[in-house]
Length: 71
Image 1 (cartoon, one colour):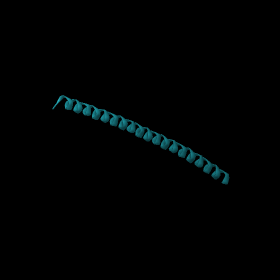
Image 2 (cartoon, rainbow, N blue to C red):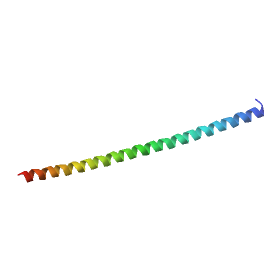
Image 3 (spheres, rainbow, N blue to C red):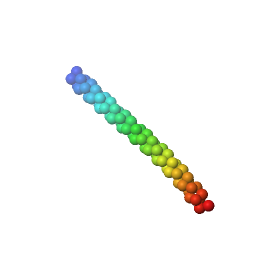
Image 4 (cartoon, rainbow, N blue to C red):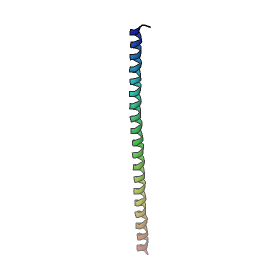
């Protein structure tokens, strides 16, 4: 290989390595966003469960009150 060809090959390898690094960086950010979305969904589910539980407690209380009023 001539010196010019060797430099072109090295330059191409460097560009390929930079593109690979860029791709890995974008992938890492994508994974971070996916993790954040999963965390937010889990938090929302837990909040919904707490709200549902609180509403069920209120319903149970009101049913007991209605039963007492019937007597």
